[in-house]
Length: 269
Image 1 (cartoon, helix red, strand yellow):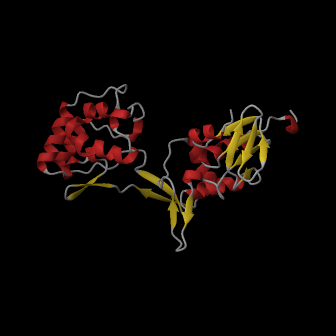
Image 2 (spheres, helix red, strand yellow):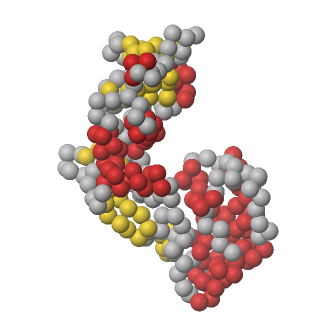
Image 3 (spheres, helix red, strand yellow):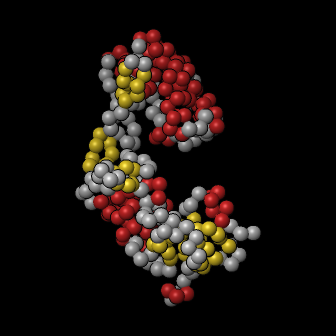
């Protein structure tokens, strides 16, 4: 198909998802696409800024770890050797002490009565059903001690959502499910157990924060991205997009990475 006859694909948003879609189109040899971004630069919620004092601040997550080969290859492609490699060093403040992460793997740091309560609950826990809500699952897997002292407050802080309103199928490698024998061994032997998890080692860009990954990816897509264009109206019938600056663009296929409620809010009847 001649390029002029190929359907016009418009991607809304130059964050990781939008840039990823554009990169796949380019890798497939597809040319008739564009990325529209309302900000002055790429990265979206994963971008970084540098303040007047020269400090870099990440808008989103500031740890980079992955078990996905596609992302690992992208990171290598855009950053090369310009990354730092770290081992995780994380602690939970509990009462008057610091407990290494994961909390449930390092009960030896707790006061004796608390440690006893936690290990007893872990021994008596019956195991969780992944079809239950997250609150039910936590108590069934960890018992009341670990759940109330750590799992419930920690996960509310992370997700800002009551555990009763969350599913538990997503857990996978995000939660350390420690069996009571392992926890008991650490408690008796007084040994740390800190190596668990997908992010026990991680990399970080040597310059520019996590946003540097997406800034460099955007440079590879130079000419395909339009910045400072805010979408104000989407007409799915005529396949027209209208922007705050008064311009319009047509499309044959639309890939939107903007929040779905905002996209719906731009749609005409």
